[in-house]
Length: 310
Image (cartoon, rainbow, N blue to C red; front, side):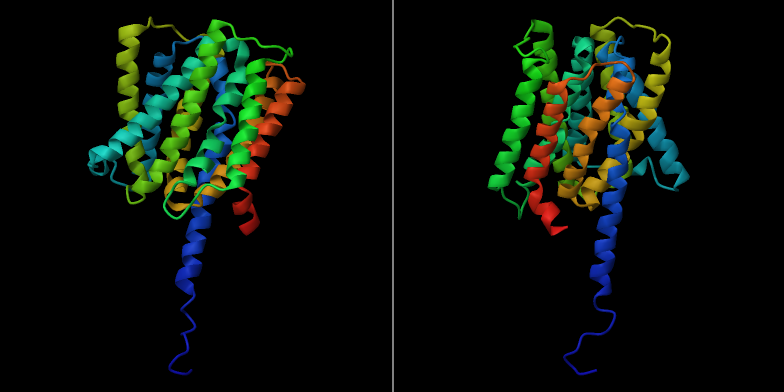
C-alpha cells in the first residue's frame, strides 16, 4: 500500500453512518404504520370530550414510555432535564396537534373521512418545511406538490355531493384539522434541531400534555364515561398511535432520512381512509379517492428529488 492510499477500513464509518440512517428511517416508518389506525380509533371514541381524550391517551402514552425506557435500561427521570426550548417545542407540538385533532373529530363525527384527509396533509407539511432546513431549498416540484395537496383539500371541503357544504360546525372542524396538520409538520421538522436530545424525553412531553389536557377538561368540559368500544379504542390509542408511535417518530426524525419519512407518510391517508370505510364509519365516493390521489400525488411530486436519489 502506497503512502497516499486509503486503508481498507476507511469506508466503514460512512457505511456505518448510512446504515444507522436507514435503520432510524425504518424505525420511524413503524410510527407511520401505527398512525394508519388513528382515524378509526378516534372515530370510535369520538363521543368523548377532546380534552378528556388528551388526558386519558397521553396518560397511557406516558406509562408506555416509562415502561419501555425501563425495559431498555434507560434513565427516564434524569433525561427530563432539558432546556426550555426543547420542552416548548415538544409540549406545543403534542398538545397543540392533538387538541385540534380531537376537536375536529368531536365537531364533525359525521364527516370523519374529510377531517381525516385534511389532517393527513401533515406529511406534505413535513416535506415542505424540511426544504427550509439548512442546506435545503424550495424547488418548483415542492410548489406544485403543495398545489396538488391544496386541490385535494378544496375537493374535501366542497363535499362529496358536488357542491359546497360549509355549515358552521364542519367549517370549524375542517379548520381544526388543517391547524393540526400544520402544527404536526412544524413539530416534526423542528425535532431535527434537537437531534442530541434523547428520545426518552418524549415521555415527559406526554406527561405534561396529559396534565394540560386534564386541567382543560376540568375547567371546560363535563366528564363522559366511555361506552362499549370507546374503552378499547382509548386503550389502543394511548399505547399505539398516541403512545409508542411518538417515540418511534422522534427517533426517525432525529436520526433518519426526514424527507424519505415524509414520502412514506403518504401511505397513511388512503390506508386510514380505507379502514374507516371498511369499518363502516364512513362512506367512499369518487371525490374521496380523488382527494386521496391529489394529496398523495402532491407529496410524491414534492419529494420526487428524494425518490430519484434513492
